[in-house]
Image 1: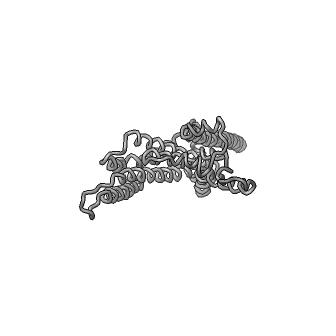
Image 2 (image 1 turned 180 degrees about the vertical axis):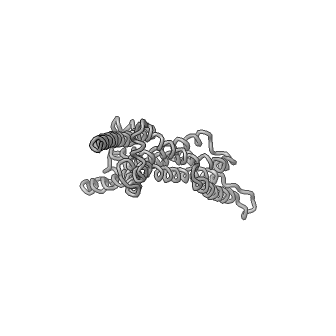
Image 3 (image 1 turned 90 degrees about the vertical axis):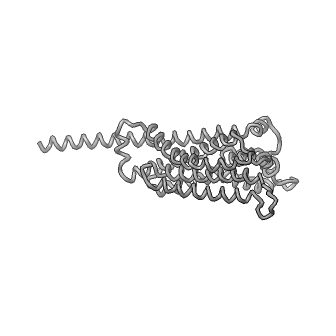
Length: 301
């Protein structure tokens, strides 16, 4: 790390994670009862809790680092210098994204020894760890692409950070708010329904853009349960079955991954297009400045 704050943040983050793990490990043993009773579910809850904490930390770190990546260069006056070089916008965006994702991954990788505590009593398989890593990478890629997009569109870093936070709130919580609005609106017009949740019908699948669904599926896989399907059938009933709705139910998480990767790619492509336009304008302005400077020299001579 080129700056000392990254190792310091890593130290404090892992200290907090280790303290949480120690507390959960002690709480899993019934010391007061004296019977040596061990609550094995605490270890599974520890793994899920620490994983969700990593998702949140990775999301925030990536979003903050990428949301001022381009706008900060613009404010310091170094963006024009980079754009007149042979470096392409694709390389520039890729470098900024890789830097942010690498830093965020440090927080996850450095806490793996603490996560290993949750496997002391079993219940956590290797596939759970791999799935946790996949969800983590998807979340930070989603956050980073949104941050890069806002940073390339906004002139100031403060505006870029606020706009990227608003965009992420819309992506994460927007589908749930939209479903509640749709549910309330349609149910008020269809009072004959026995259950208001079925007023939502197929609109429930707009949740496909929210990474919260990946976290819920991760929770179901590790803890056990069927909260994802309960959300479809009880919280936001899907209504009439169709071929498309059946396919989305059966392959919902796979569709989530594909759609969210496509949205991340679209965000990055828009940012590259924006930088490409800025690059052309910068080169044209530099060319005109050189031409004017040459004319002034000829007149003075």
